Amino acid sequence: MTTETTEGQSSAPSVGATTDIPVAWHQINWREAERNVRRLQTRIAVRP
Image (cartoon, rainbow, N blue to C red; front, top):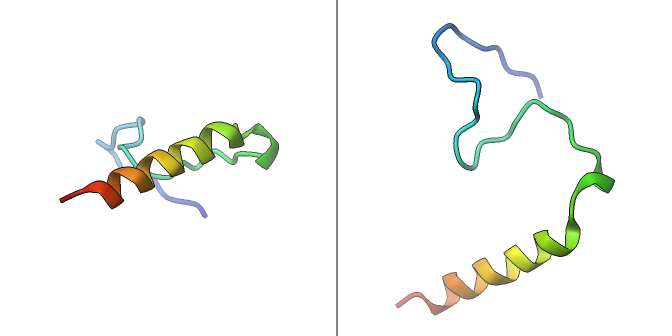
């Protein structure tokens, strides 16, 4: 996926936005990612 940048756009991505920087699967800290998924699932399930 490629995107074109326009003048005035910030170079820092906003929260939750994907970046144009490719990430190799082996660079991802899967233990931390899975821990975050479990934590967020718990937060969603516990919401009143």
